[in-house]
Image (cartoon, rainbow, N blue to C red):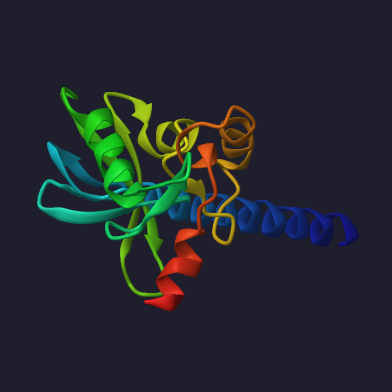
Length: 169
């Protein structure tokens, strides 16, 4: 009787383990499913329209279009430059693919997007025209640290974090 109970217990544990495994796999597949694919156009430094869907690039924050920064005592339009950098990254790409990363607190669709297999967000942070959005993700923090050390893009001079700039608007 004890052996039979132990066997039944092990069977129940095995079934529960497999159900849990299947549920986790289904959740992972849903969370990272392709939500947009095709040609893209740029809205601003961290937003694309891909296949007719507006996608905010997951894990990054870029200056707003009207935002300015200082460089060599000159005011530059860093929001426009960030947008131009994103446009340069996707120009010539055969296919832009975005996988689902949920929605932000304002309800905007978040996507981890690639241009012909290259991570667009990582490239924006690498060039210094976007920041790692540390509040939501840490995937680009090391890339940002390297861009900052090399004084690329925004890191060439003083700038206001896009989050802080938006609060003042």
